[in-house]
Length: 110
Image (tube, rainbow, N blue to C red; front, side, top):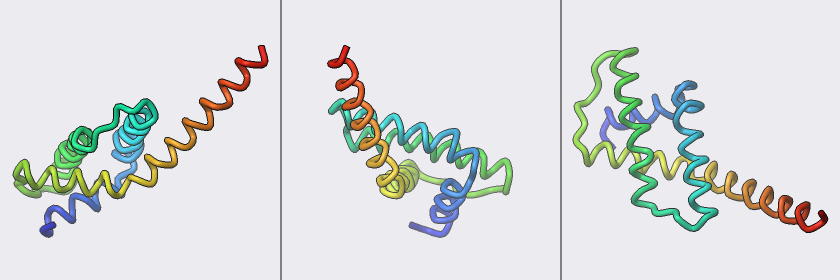
């Protein structure tokens, strides 16, 4: 990663609105896909590409010029974000599986 890529990565991972507005919903969506068996890593990187593009736009609006980034550089940042949030995704998968088990148990009791 070059300096601009690293700066953008840090900006995205530390920005509250991006975290709650984009990163966490993306993690939740990917966790649901893992639970249903429809998860594909290439599409997961693509999902985080939306977070990267939004991060670039917000950074330029708030802080000034950064980049320009090639598509490959954006994908590298997205892949790094996927790696960064992998624990969050895995924890959400565990939570969803526990909730599914509880739902099955309560529906059997009725």
